[in-house]
Image (cartoon, rainbow, N blue to C red):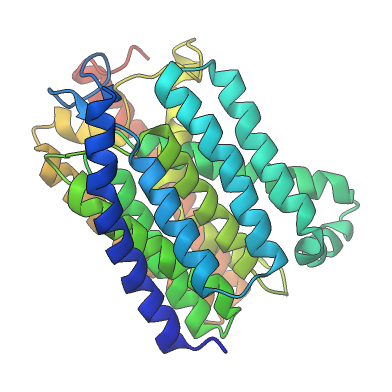
Length: 349
């Protein structure tokens, strides 16, 4: 029988497992010369071992399978992460075509959503009131997962940024699961995810001894998005949507700004650049460590707002005001980022 104390223990077991496994991965990556070389949009100056994502996957999967009860939604989660693991490893090793990488993401997301279609029935029923077909709702859910996968993938540009951000979001979601009396198995996934991220952060914080690569960032994005969807309960509401947006606010804002920036600059949305939020902060004179810590602090504030939104019963009028204010702040933020980016030569908008 699962209990909150037992799940907290899983957090520490996942942390310990990652701390033990990661040095082995570092040695293996150096032995096989699987490293990320500096250059272009990258901020590191020395070749750094990749394959951190492999260690993240091993720690996560082993702790989950040994200590959590076998359920359909957890089996589908692991099978889907295997698809992303293969996709990420191929990209880290051979730099595959972005379209092929996207296909792997869509395949993994489609598998986990369709396998657990019954969990999202209430969403289909809700949107059915507005004559939106069920298959469109499932496409939107799959699209949301793919968005978060790429959002976490794109913020993985500084030492410790993606792993620390993911840990903060995992812990916020676990707190929400506890406060709302949600499924304990899902809370277990979130705490295992947090422990794995923090264990990896020991080796990934500046100066990083290893990078997670696309393997790790895509896995974390996928597990974050999926475990959040697993935790969502009836009824579907504006409060749920707004709270969810605040949980993932930083990575979603960054990927949205990246898409806007590249389309406005008439470039491929898949082409990497140095216009991300963390690049802008560095161009303003902040060090890598200070930039990461600033973003951590912003993340903590944003997920704190999300917890309040989802844990409290807020009147619809207040939710509307929060949504409008948030939209205005985002527009002003995008404008400021564009001005700073142009001034510092980070983009050509």
